[in-house]
Amino acid sequence: QMQLVESGGGLVEAGGSLRLSCAASGRTITNYAMGWFRQAPGKEREFVSAITWSGGSTDYADSVKGRFTVSRDNAKNTVYLQMNSLKPEDTALYYCAARRIGQQEYGYWGQGTQVTVSS
Image (cartoon, rainbow, N blue to C red; front, side, top):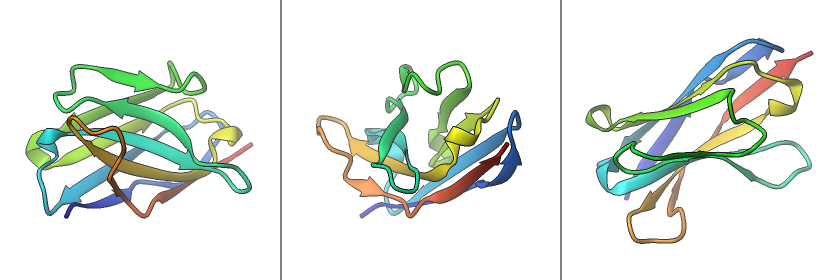
């Protein structure tokens, strides 16, 4: 089993920045693509960003392109999401997830960290 723990959320003013971290334990993330998702109150969970096991390829939702950057440090078993130019609509509970290479679904999820952006 893999455990994922997110941290780094908080309250920030519009235009500010936050860096989320997702620390994995139980298994190495080396064989996993890692993703970030978010869920705002009253809305469905949505994809934010993903990074391949090597970090060689990344993907972003259109709403965060150019503002968010995903990265990973396999030696530290940790994934990061740098969020810049934050907007009130970025307010949500942010989750990280792990998807084993060759599988279609994300099999492991963290509990989430709250990001609140004030206008």
